Image (cartoon, rainbow, N blue to C red; front, side, top):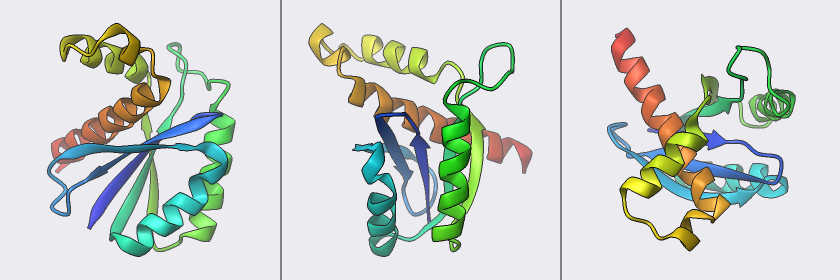
Length: 139
């Protein structure tokens, strides 16, 4: 079964997913936030997903960010509408900064780096990869 990660935003959400062996995290797409639940329900019908990881936006001082309440509300709705998937949170501090660094290091051009949807998708991939590494460390 797969693990799916969401970098939840007010306007759009980056989505990343593992392979079925949960070894590699790959960026999947970006979805407009109002369409996210429908997208997830459709995806889970086609692909087996055991866990959905939501990036939990926290400020550098550890306090809740402006977006955290929206994430928690969506997660509560997700648990209710998709009880077959466990929902977990993972600290997403600095993922946007890391996503920009990945784009720079990979040689992506300046115009493409301005694409916020690409940043969101890469951020979701970073959240998922970090989540998997953390989980392996705890075993």
